[in-house]
Length: 77
Picture 1 (cartoon, rainbow, N blue to C red):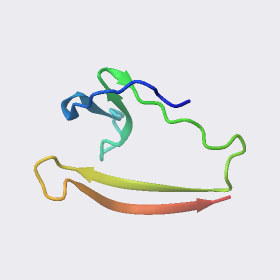
Picture 2: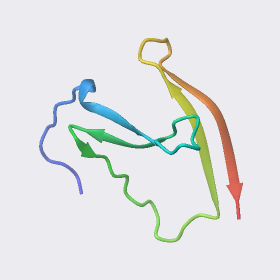
Picture 3: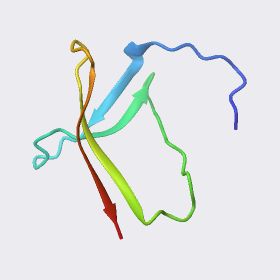
């Protein structure tokens, strides 16, 4: 459903949620929030695909570029 009203964006209101599991040494990102509301990504299909691609990345707001993809893996069933 399209959004009909205009929203302002403030980068300072965007937060990454990190895994705090003891065995997760890399602190995996597990979600995003904006203005204290979780960002939900809609389903793209009701029938899951037979494959998935996962990427690990690093974000450093001071570095240029601030986004760095560390690795990518594809899985197939």
